[in-house]
Length: 72
Image 1 (cartoon, one colour):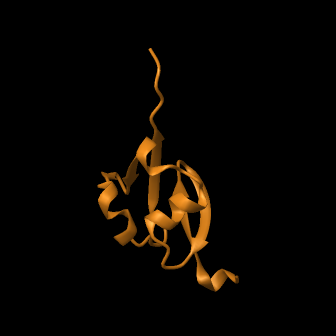
Image 2 (image 1 turned 180 degrees about the vertical axis):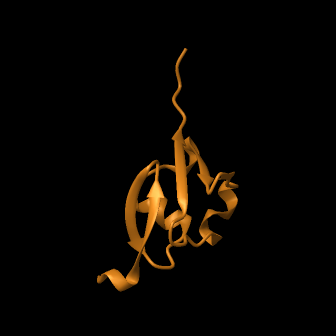
């Protein structure tokens, strides 16, 4: 894949190149992140997990993914 088909986003503070027109769900699959154990923020807005397949990522989107950890 050439760079023309990719865009740059930021995930948890790190730059990442992804395929243009990728959904938020595509990103989670690529990063092997289980959706039921995270909270997702896109450009400082919390995302409803039911909508992640419909959210297409854009150049310079900023994503924060927080993992839930159990304990006592």
